[in-house]
Image (spheres, rainbow, N blue to C red):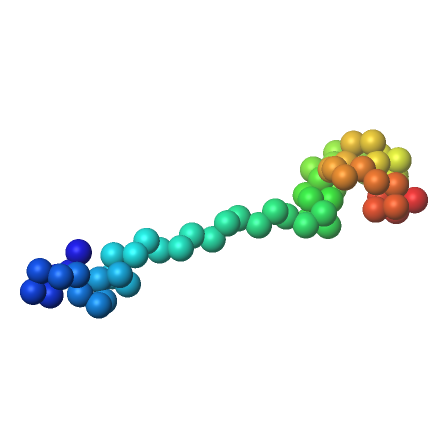
Length: 65
């Protein structure tokens, strides 16, 4: 810690302060669906397949039916 005549200096709180860390963001549902589709091995996929095997949330409205 930086000191000035035995006291902490004005700038020491900025020098010694920990760097704020950013929290990792959750991927959006569209990104999760894209990741799922890129690993789908079949040549065709249906809405039922997305609803059954796809990423959560498995909501029918969000699945496209």
